[in-house]
Amino acid sequence: MSAQRLIAHFDLDAFFVSVECLLDPSLKGIPLAVGGNSDRSVVAACSYEARKFGVHSAMPMRTALRICPQLRIVQGTRGAYTRYSRMVTEMIAAAAPVFEKASIDEFYLDISGMDRFFNPLEWTVALREKIISQTGLPISFGMGSNKMIAKIATDAAKPNGFLFIEPGKEGSFLDPMPVSKIPGVGDQTYRDLLQLGIETISELRQANPDLLTRQLGKSGTDLWKKAHGIHIGAVSPYQETKSVSTEITFDKDVSDTDFLLAELVRMTEKVAFELRQDNKLAGCISVKIRYPDFETTSRQTSIPYTFYDDELLPQAKLLFHQLYRKGKSVRLIGVRLSELTDGARQTNLFQDVNRKSDLYKAIDEVKNKFGKGALNKAGGMKK
Image (tube, rainbow, N blue to C red; front, side):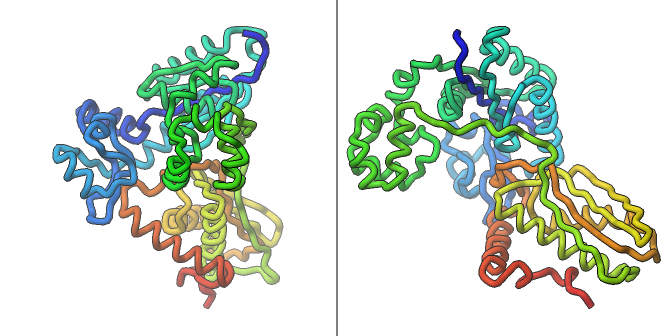
């Protein structure tokens, strides 16, 4: 293989289900779903055995149980998901020159130029085998000339396999597939394409790009390019240091604990709101306190990935109480969320997902319309 752009896409197969099976081996090989048991619960993740019955993620749990009565439901173990995701992240970070953590269970690796030193496919296979050996997690990967090809190849390689699409052979790989296999083609776009008589990627590739633009707008041009295997998205280097934070320096030093806690609640709500707007999850929270003599202390703790106020606030308050010297005046207080990752759809797997998501959606809509300070928890109101 000559020097060329090469991207690998790693996907931890049925990640949440796989972790549950590692924690309880008796769950292996049975129809399994992760989610809640309430009437409003949905399937957060399911095993391949459950998928054979038509069960899929985001399906109402009642429907899943109706089509698969033997379905076993587990509430989920969020701390374990975070722990295993970090294990894989650390192993990839130690080996890959450039990688992007696209979500809690999905990674892109840019291995371009590595063919000057060794075979990139063999290197990637060896990394996959090392991760499987040390974590017990099944992993599929696809490799190709860009992120889109790599991702589609990964889907084709599942479960627990790998597939390399050599540069120049993208067309023969894509052509037989339905257009729904192209990332970003949702139900509505799929229906629009069917109405145009376009069902396969081959038919999309041969379509008139001007017609697609007239019918679908800019997305029509993008889809035509994707049908030709063209995708220019770069692998964004993953940085543990990226974060969202806020802090306040008081006009007068403050020793009122209730007031300080109210500020802490307000600031935590603020950064959590910013996370949700960016569709990010945080895996670490830290609190900083600065005293009048400019002595500054901070403490942080790892947390299950989240962007919800009610899950961040208890950790923020705990860190504050661990740091604060009771009765001493405070000059500055701050909150920082770090270890950010995409994939907010994967948070809150063990509660009533719809109800909680709907609640925060309503809260954020009010804040977007009337300002961030339009709606706050009682604990964040200053007395």
